[in-house]
Image (cartoon, rainbow, N blue to C red; front, side, top):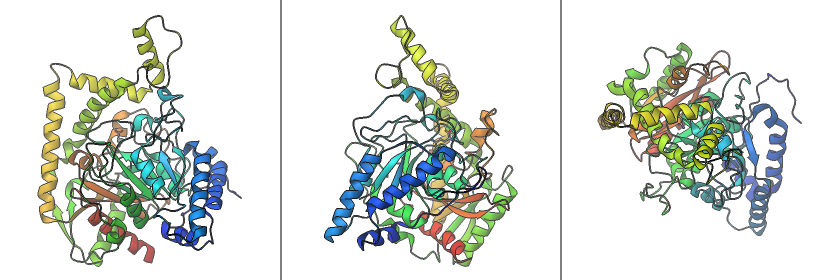
Length: 489
Ligand code: GLN
């Protein structure tokens, strides 16, 4: 039974993947019963949190029954056998609605599964449904969803972060054991930090984007959320790897991330960039990250300053590159091929115009305008090309830093979760919430955000651990060391 008043936090830690799997293998837990209990919890709490946009009950229960049969036969179980998982609604699942948080995709039921969805299911996961997000993943608070904001399970008056707000809140409230999200400029890391869970930004090319509704193709990545580092590592191991359907996916072999995450960290060199600890950083966040750094030193890491001086140009560069690519990607939503079509138009061009005008929300329109402007003749060199040059400088700067250190740690976001409505009137203030996350997005490197303390009011704070391309294992190790200290205290 679910109790509690409207304003009370709705936080609950899911059991770990390993513990659940062990119980399913031994017959102590049935995958079907587990799935049913998650649907019950979702039915009870979703009206308050608005985390799920749609549920895939039949598919989940069929998969759970398959897992229970395998367990009953005593056959070996796949790595995510029976684990209830939620999917951000920018990834397609065969037959299920795919909205990307937008009205313009109303009625669209894709005929295929995203590669990551198919891989999760092949690994035994039970897919519960589609998770709320900012429209086309554009936002930092989930308030740009056409289906209403998600609420932060730690404080229902606050945002969960964005754009993968539903994915982060679902894990924090135990409405899934793990989830998938997408991260273009921080959309996995920032909400994970606001909701007190682990979020992973895999290296660009590490995970297939086949079946991801594109926002900015040179930046978009798919990655997992979980309640602990090991589970997040396990999920990444399942979804990572080459996919013939995505030419940008890398053939590099996939390590055993879960095993790697347990390796000790003594002797690792950790870089601390002063540029991430300057003006605008909330003092409570600064204090928590300071404690996290001290914990790493106590675990035998050697910390040292690193310099990333182009960080200050990252927000403008990101919002030029991302909007330019978005303006191209979103051209396909025209009222003809997918979803919503405006009913009352006399001509084809009026139908395009009205469908887009009625189907897209304000932030998406702002980005299409900005991006179209940045790419237009006469402005291309001044804006888009310049942003690409800044991007290259940022990437080179990271590579230079990684010549001296194994990982870089920073706050994930400059503040804890802010109040609903606090930044909706000021797009620039909203964009600044991404100040520490867009750099890794532009550089293509990987990172993990891990809970690293709370404010006195109980709001979670995340530490971002960045590592060089295809070195997720190191990011997991460092994140795990921070997590281990917190578990022990
Ligand atoms: N908040 C950033 C934006 O609005 C990042 C979004 C994302 O990573 N998808 O663009």
